[in-house]
Image (cartoon, rainbow, N blue to C red; front, side, top):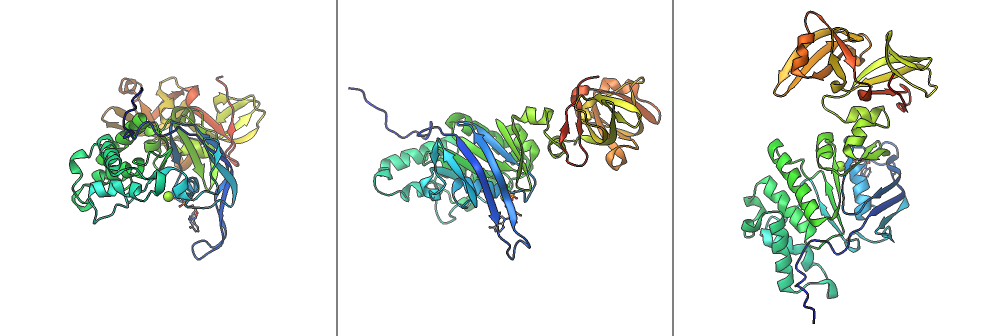
Length: 382
Ligand SMILES: Nc1ncnc2c1ncn2[C@@H]1O[C@H](COP(=O)(O)OP(=O)(O)O)[C@@H](O)[C@H]1O
Ligand SMILES: [Mg+2]
């Protein structure tokens, strides 16, 4: 007879599940908080694939927490449906959805030990769902092992560092073996070094558990470094969904191109005439789109190559050498705010002297947009 191992494992989760959002919308009515109704989530149609870590990214106030709260069930949608693994969960309360949640402020019980905090969600289970005491402890110990806090089980939250408290919160969120893990800006309260370390931990934990995870952040670098897939939103509106590198390399619009990348993309006032995109009288790109007239020409900092014979002539403000990076701060009359920044190789500095600097441009680093709508204008190398 086959003997099955004790079901103490928190990974893999009971079942992997994708998340599908269909026409999902949340409108908050006019209130003391909002002078007029706010569409915090505007008609989202997304599939979040199972077993992946997805970064939900956007500026503060754009609706990230609202979107996450709709997925968890803490908020009810104005309309639209939510499916977990093909099952419509829209009308289920949070506790029936099988989600684990982690918030910015940990939300641990201060008077309970680490072990008791991790046990807490299981102790709330009723009837058949409630594991035996031994199994609860085995699961809590395994969750603690996974987040590497086994030696802290007897401490109270007040006796832990911020990073350790966040690990406890993660252990508590995964101990019920959720099909979906939702993290709302979980690293915001940590200092820079701990933030880096803890985000790598979250990546490792997700890799090991394979729980479908949605990670909310306003920090583009954090989202780029941790996510399998990025969902970028602005003012309630979905802008782009894609792999981090793809969203960076092929931004769907000007907002996306500006939101991703440090230093940010340089935007120049340009024009399109007969299929050629000009900055001033310099032909920077070509387009078959049929678009004519004023355009916004974005060039990533790494798209500039110092070159005495380069086509784009700029004023040289200064050269900054910071660790591995060398950047050239330049001025140009067509540049937004009059100046810009290029990241160049230190060898190329031999091409730089005097008060002007000429650049040749990498066509793959140039993105052209309709200046009014921000929509991308497709270009081709010239
Ligand atoms: N409970 C609420 N009642 C009214 N308005 C809200 C509520 N929650 C969020 N909002 C509004 O919805 C918008 C999005 O908020 P939120 O989802 O918290 O953004 P984010 O998490 O991206 O910072 C904001 O304009 C905010 O004021
Ligand atoms: Mg938020």
